Image (cartoon, rainbow, N blue to C red; front, top):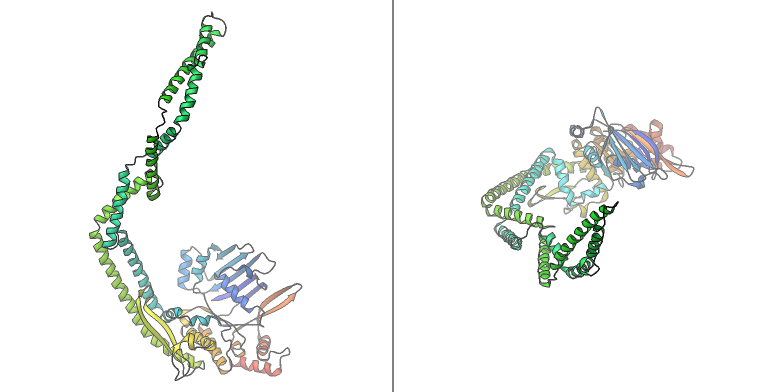
Amino acid sequence: MLSSLFISNLALIKNCEINFDKGFNVILGQSGAGKSILIDAISFVLGAKADKTLLRTGENLMKVEAIFDSVSEKTKAKLNELGIDFDDQLVISRTLSADGKSVIRVNGSVVVLKALKEITADFVDFCGQHDSVGLINVNNHLAFLDRFVGGEAEGYLSALNEQFDRLQDVEKKIKALGGDDSERNRLKEILKFQIDEIESARLTLGEEEELRDKFNYISSAEKISENVGEALNLLERENSSATGNVYEAKNLLSSLGAFENIDECKERLNSVYYELKDVAETLEGILDGADFDPIMLEKIDKRLDLIKDLKRKYGKSVDEILAFCDNAKKRLEELDNSEEVLGKLEKERQSVQNEIGSTAEKLSTLRKERARVLEKDLERELEDLQMKGTTFKVNFEPCAPTRKGCDEVRFIFSANLGQEMKDLSKTASGGELSRLLLAFKNIMLDKESTVIFDEIDSGISGQTAGKVAEKLKNISKYLQTICITHTPVVASKGDEFILVTKESVGNETISHAKIIHDEEVVKEIANLIDGSEKISETAINHAKELLLKK
């Protein structure tokens, strides 16, 4: 249960701390005072979407901290799984800064939003005046029924989920083997084509790089011939060539005697001469092989186009293309030898499908048995809520088994004797839907922890309001109940009273929340009765009478 709540800089609330009772907690206050901000704060700390518009104007950080007592064994197991210590209390805090950054801590340990939602999934059930609209949506009806059925339904649904996982796994394996005969044969033909196309190309590693170098060389042959030829002329073909000049210089020095530094220069010129001769010979070889061959160039171009096309289909490089071919051969071999494996998988698939059908049928039988109980229980609760003559039925339609079973469920309803039963969306008024939701809550007390009602009694008055008040009070005997209300008789049933007020301080508006007792409680309930600026003595006496009846 929710023990206490601390709020800082959330909407109109600057700083606020509230302690909650284990029974019926009533939140009172004028319209617009900020009562729903308390619900927003609880939603936020339990993992609702972080909305920066909730951050108080002019502030940089908002924070909500909630303390919970008596968590379930399931929650304790989750905390243990996450390595979070737990003794007697669970402290959850969540902050949101102006730049949108949020930090969540559970008993001091930082957790991500997903973990927070997993921990707090069953902590609080929110029931607002608009939540009863969920009853209209036929897609929710099966979930309502399964919630009523409880653990047995959960067991079957868990089994179905596991069985569908197994079926999915088997079907993946079958698909990996090519599916049915026609699909497998089609895949084999594709693999054969791919293998033939790659093998017929006779690719070799490093081939593409060699072809590109050769293509670039042949493409540049004309320029190579021109430049290399001119270089050769300068080196030794012209009368005043570099080689000839070096040779002459060497001979001139050779005729001299052994003078200082001349011998060294003779040696160096001799080395230069032979180096130039070697360069000239190399260039002669290059010039001889630098013939421009357009036919060879076209062949190389076509070969490169073929490699490019294969890369587009099978890989980014020749290495990857060859690897693709090897894998295709292995895949083809698997398909050729898959008949025996496939036969076993087909039998396994049929076995799992039979299990799914059996589990779904058992779940359907259970649902139908419990649906009859649900119908009677709801009709009894609705009669207590001033809806005598109401008929409520759970309508079943069979469907192909899914993870949810083999049932499509919708609720049909008639508020008066003799009237045709129709879908809830076509016949139930807003007030009737609110009472129907309250009836659901009352018969499923052992399925929830803290329950919060946000003006669920809106639009209800007279004896009906009294009956709603009794139902809410009854719920609070088993579950911690928090209720925002404007209905005096509902408010009077409270065990703890929280008053939300709003005031202007300077240039800002601030909402406050505090626990009230005795005369303050009488005054606030009388205010709900009277509503005038000066509360009448009659309203005060009436409020006292209501409080005495609780």
